[in-house]
Image 1 (cartoon, helix red, strand yellow):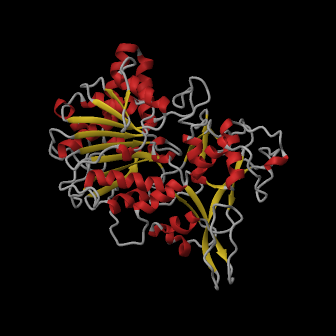
Image 2 (image 1 turned 30 degrees about the vertical axis):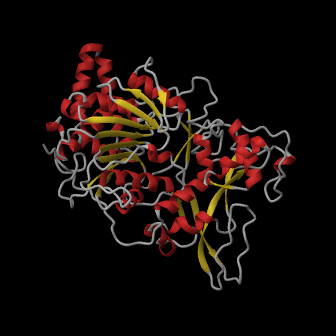
Image 3 (image 1 turned 180 degrees about the horizontal axis):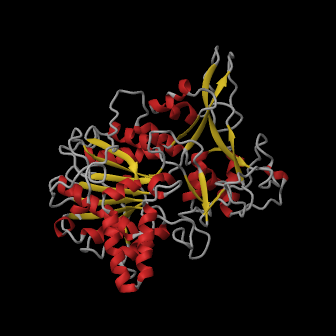
Length: 533
């Protein structure tokens, strides 16, 4: 595989913003993120106490006693919003994707439901071609070689592992290199869905393999080298040790993390600014001169009897679903999130002067927390010192690769079609564009021991990793063993991964790497570097 890795990719770049900036601490981000769970608390309260009073400042849900919500989760969300007032978009996304009551990943209400593949809602790169996962395994191998061939203490970590297909291909590939395979201590899978944990266990360990539970998570033994596998619901449950060399992969993970959305408005001069009518907002800063302030976009129920026509469902979204149960509305005054999150990065603060009123902004606190965690594991941090940085993280997802801040990127996917993200909560997959520049800045802020390479287009990354050469070998073998059509299928699959046409995966998806700091002396393979043996 070494000969299949071409040389430098000229536009691969390193993003290492180290300037002193006004920023939110990890603890502040954590508190804001935890604050999004207020809706979960509200739904729990509702399940225990049903006789709550209606909030008169909301749309009068009581007036339509016969309203039928599209899903059980939609009904629960509407009842909770009636109690708490309109909620942040991040809270809505979190409940839709991970609620125990019909959440998309964690509370499926359809029998034998599978979100992935042709029969599901979407297809991911590892499901399209085995070569994708094989090249991720080769990328980890090249980093292991370049960082000194550590003989023990290797950890493989995947966040959002789906069915487990990617990790299976990675492990199968690494088995061809016994020295690295024997240096692996453990495999960690960060997965919130009980159903997906079982699917991953069945693939990686076997259907008959037992799964036991501990305070850390769930445990089983991998079919490759009898390695221990640990499933956790959050990466914070995975211990951080300075002697470990973590290799982390996040494929189509960051796009599913909840975001807060904001709009910049011009606030006229006044002696005082009235408090929002909703319970979750706070007074705006008092001002005696006109000023620009951020307003958070909140989720509230649509009016009873709404249709796709009355809600102006965009033509880009399928109308095969019931009309959306919810809609976005702009807060009338500041919320606690709008007072802090838009100031968390210089790029965000600059929008006030570069764009002005009407500027839109999406912020993902969870993305910053995960990027910071990756960086601390690799490069160390004040809380977790590491004398010699080691390991690597590879992030592959879709979003702008030019540093652009994502806006209006929330999308809903149902049975391979774009639908309203507010239709059929719990049955509709939700995703957003990833702010790669924000991830890079969060990582380098968290640890002085790391540097970031990329993002670069997935098509460029895979081509540099040798996807063409590997796929040609597989296509030839498939043609000989299974016939010409099988060979053509292999060829079609890999070309789909590198397609650079409008909306093509090779163009829309980006790759970003977090590595130990080395003053930019060594670029990783796939980002313009060569194999170091």
